[in-house]
Length: 505
Image 1: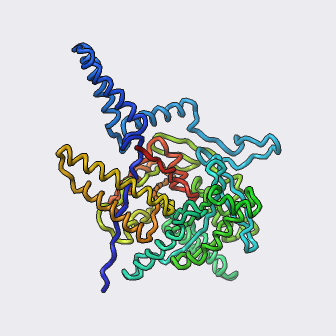
Image 2 (image 1 turned 135 degrees about the vertical axis):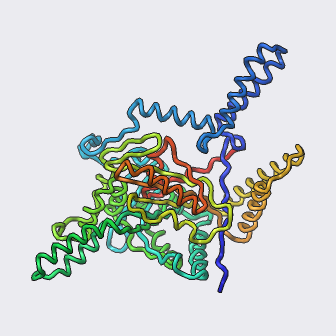
Image 3 (image 1 turned 90 degrees about the vertical axis):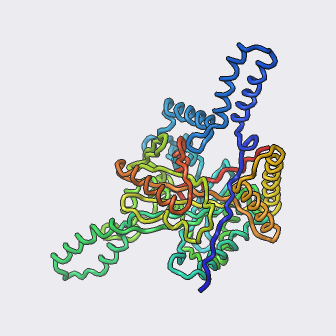
């Protein structure tokens, strides 16, 4: 029997103004150094008594860590959050409170926080239907979302597992080109209680008119409990096109949003064969109403059952249009707390994966994260940014030079090299060799959200999430002070969550 293949080699980005120091942190160190030199220049013990404690405090703020953040970043984040609370900027109201257009008097799509700038456009999909496109005018991106299905990895042998992982890697490598207009791919999966719509639809179609009333009543009671007892998974693939990268193609297609949508549709059609090769089956590219429904059900879990009944045309829902009007995609109300995000009738806590497994892991190592839970909904977004060969070469060369410089500095100062540092150097060299041999390089991040409709269940659900993450070899960090941003990245399939690369000295 073939030995199962293991995987490793994730490397964290080193982003900072100077080494690992942020801009404010570097300023704190500079001021601390100036304070330490002041008593020497003045030859004054009184100045030393004043300057040394203050310098030590500044160094503590620069190098100290609080829940994975530097102390200065934690303080700035806390102050910014408290200012937002004082100004009530952390509270969002939509519905009758949404602003109306001065030109038409119509209430446009109203989403909170970082999503406020998004617009859901519609474009012909080339097959006689409409495609929903999430347009971000600030970032200049256009995102299409597909609901996909896949055969999975857990119940197949190691050879098939390796083949499916390799086919996904080959798909990612096709976008690691200099001229690729696709700037981002995102895989989003939700694990949620089954709405029971499919079961009710099948039952309604198979109950005969002469069925005994007692049997029908008993069957209804059984189905009432069968739906909530089960769980289901939804998987989405988001493809994001950059208007700046595809500038010439968009101009050739007519320019503007129409041209961008046409280029995006063309890229999606070209992607079809590669998705099939990667064992992914596209159930449907979401229409504007379908895309709005995925957003709406994340904000309001109670809307899941009603929308599923409408889609399945359950008796009493016949003739109801499927999906949600894009103008109604957002929540009626939302409030951002320091560690939680409240939206309509639910509460969500979002985590970012800070450290990937250091040891060798199997292809199924993420499986515990979406383990069914009756008391909570879980969602996970894996966001990928393929890098072109030139940028990948620059990034890896920069990473190698940083680690080599640090290694030589440690040797000159007589410090011993730890196994972790030696491993990082070898990993950087291995990645550069793989790139030179034709492999692609991608940036990636993962964001996980857990949602409950009963506040008393929240901390239990969070503890279960952290335990499952530890079982997968992941280190999570709660997105303190940025839970609304985290929700947009982890609970919605819109391709959010991967910031621009920040480079330092």
